[in-house]
Image (cartoon, rainbow, N blue to C red):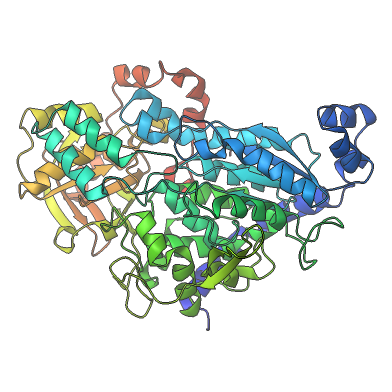
Length: 615
């Protein structure tokens, strides 16, 4: 299938604008790749320290036999349900590496926080910047520089982008990502949302709300809605950085352990005399992640209505590989990429139902066949991206239940996934909004058609708490656009504002025309409420949200792609910018470790530039 002209054009302009930075990046990779292995290159004391704790047999292999040595970077902790299963992965990986004549070491751990735990608390203001901390921790882990390949163990929101950014700074290493999969289905996402809305109205108490939340989040694995964590997994499949089809196999499933072993076999492909395979080497991650790979990830995001957070994270990922992308690129792709999935919050299904209906394999096949993805890309597998159109299966009659992949076939549930010839929408799930209020994004796939255009007077809030107070005082019972500012990277670290969803959904349920405009983040948590998020430049950086006043009429138009304050142009130009209240500025920097992130807030780039603190 011929590549779609828009996909080709977006890729070409990324390649052109990135030429200087990408060339410099590849030159650095070549210098690193052309060195001798660590055990030969380093001094004797360095080598002795690096392998002092290895079993004698492993030490002999890596030092004397020059066997490949893998670095494991793990985000394991048992605070996160998604990462708790990773506890036993390192030993499994070491056993498989030894079987293949190689060695493996845990190079280091990275911090991993749960937005679900910190939601609406001061700790959430560390969340976005934890991505950059994870990237730095990955760099520290790999800086021992004795590795011939790497395995990245992580799943959730900031963890995967952070691991990927860190790995790309060691782009000369073949690298495979190893997830743990989603928890089994509990209370449905729609029912959970219904109980939250009743709680916001005071119709149920804490006991009923906690019971519902505990039924929804009930075991090991990622949350089952299609938020940032599960979008991460879809994008890694589209970039060819997983073992194919690994994303949504549940922890504890019969195949889960074998897929982890397959990750070891994959990264060792063609390396060392005992490594099984075709002889084709697993390519370095810095070569795998090029402009075509990044575009494939963007296309997969649009086709699945994935998390808006990736309009920040994947900009930062691209920068780590010497590539420059912006929201115009996402917008252009969204115009031509059809929406192929309905998974909560832009549908009622959860990720387990998505997997059962066809999952990533079905979506990638449809996009390839429609000419909407680059097929001529490197992946960690010798068979390229076509391998990612299969569904993994185990053969019970084969020793060890040998893995094989089966064709995704037709959709098993066309209320969840559809072919490109009959999509849910001819356009992608995300849209860029521009106007005199700046540039922002909206997850339009989750919003009912009759709510794509909202025009109403606004009420300006300086915090989530202030909006809740107004809601509880019955001050918002009208058509209204709520503006919540001072929520960007420089202001307070750009937290997710999930606490706003229940009250806004209640107002919408009463029949009012309601929308949110903010320089903060919402991921997919806005649900069916229109939300213009990531407004850039942010208010704290002198962005136009600092000009908005109570009563200004605002128009959010997700059909035309505009976001404007309907204020006379001369008056708008003459208005002074409000400044963040001093008490709020001070409070944003104190407590819960926020003092340690002051330099990150100070240095953070705009959301559209990836909110990077390291550039």
